[in-house]
Image (cartoon, rainbow, N blue to C red; front, side, top):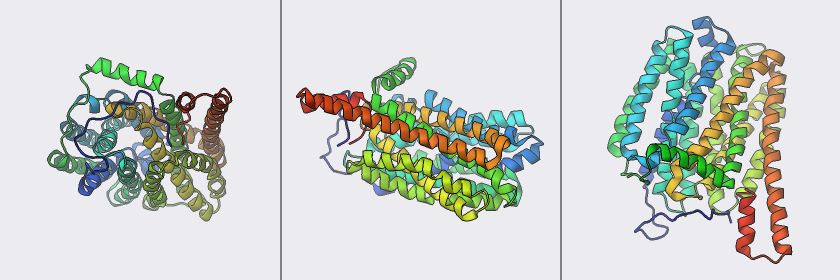
Length: 433
């Protein structure tokens, strides 16, 4: 069974155990909303060549659009996401959606690279709306169905990521890269209206003032070893993900492929396996198999780069590698979230803030290093970089498991009780079964 934190506080409810507290229609509203919100982070990835040409800047400068959007997202996760525990989320979410629409409109109208990059930071800030919605859905679910609900919502989020690239590619071919951001802004306005009328009530969960709220997020991260471990694993996984999708545009737009924006965008659909993995990972975690899921996905993060490396000349290798990598990244991500949401029910937005901030810092590092690696050594250098991040994830997880095993063996040798053994495993940060 997953190890629980000794700080866990039950959430009061008048409903019997196992009774659904969130309907299927509402779950799918959450799934669609998170997908639309998070898509704003990824529209630029298949457009980097077009942006570079349109604004007459280098590929590395164009890639800053991805990096700064992710850094803006990380900043929003620190400063905005904890508000989900402080404010009524039924009102907070639509307001954040409207703010994101304004930032997207600014990107569409930006006449120069500096203004485009400034707007990209604002888009990243607003895209944290998606991460306000995930713990919101988790709060509405019962313990027995929480992994399933989170997995479904994450499937919607992942489909948003995948379709973002495809939609962006084709819209750019039809009307140029600016059209992508015009359509995205309109979509966010429509979404804000739907959320305003359909979201369930979600009162504040804490009476802390804002500065104390932010301080408590850092304190929770410091006090929860399971959260720290899962945050590191998430950061490494998203670094792998960002290395691939940032550099892939450069590979596909040059020799030997010479694909256009629309065809490059289609590669996002290969990650549909990741969306399927998200739903399955949530169910696996509900059944108490988080350790096995983490082990398999961590290893696949590194192994996926072998077919990806072969993909520099073979399309089949590229296709297989993309599918395996996306499956591993998203399966690990949902497993991580299913574990950290068990820690402190009264602080899920702050826990998500700590986890997702670390996660997207890893992504920003990956997206910033990918074009440097590509310029320095082509696709081979990118493959080495991605495999190194993947191997680091497997090593971190193996070390955590070995540490937890030693503590359990030591506790058994001294005839310690099961409670103490669990506490020691938790202290080791295993977060496993």
